[in-house]
Image 1 (cartoon, rainbow, N blue to C red):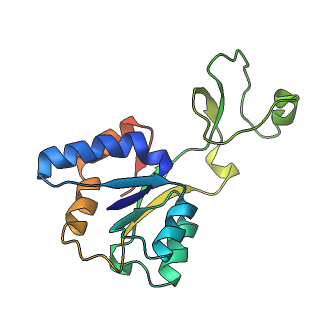
Image 2 (image 1 turned 60 degrees about the vertical axis):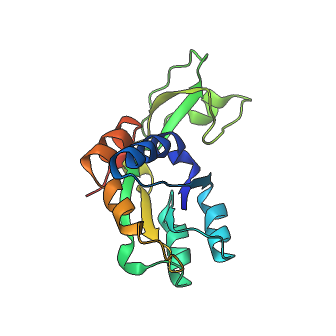
Length: 170
């Protein structure tokens, strides 16, 4: 049972299908916000592996001794991007002091909205790095945990994850 950040759904569904084909092993994945998944793990949900969309929620579980510390590693990186509705004709260059509030007008700023197109990435030096850590849970007795984590670091899985916009961390 893999608990994974919702932003990984499309990429991880594709990787899991390849894992099943290549390794002959089944996975079940539950997707939600990292905070929701961490709280469920804390409440004894039956997770074997957790992939968080940020380091803080993995650290939260680590401080409670709920992960196998030796399995924790930074798996993926990502970019922070500005999106607009796919029908939008707005053009806006992302740079220091760019007029984001003015561009919004009376509109709303949403995070992780579907049906959007990427207007551009925010420079890396404008926000903390976006890192997706992975770890096996301390309560897991699943002997497949190490092979799944190793598979996610394989070239085959890496190609799929990168196709979906993630950076595989070494």
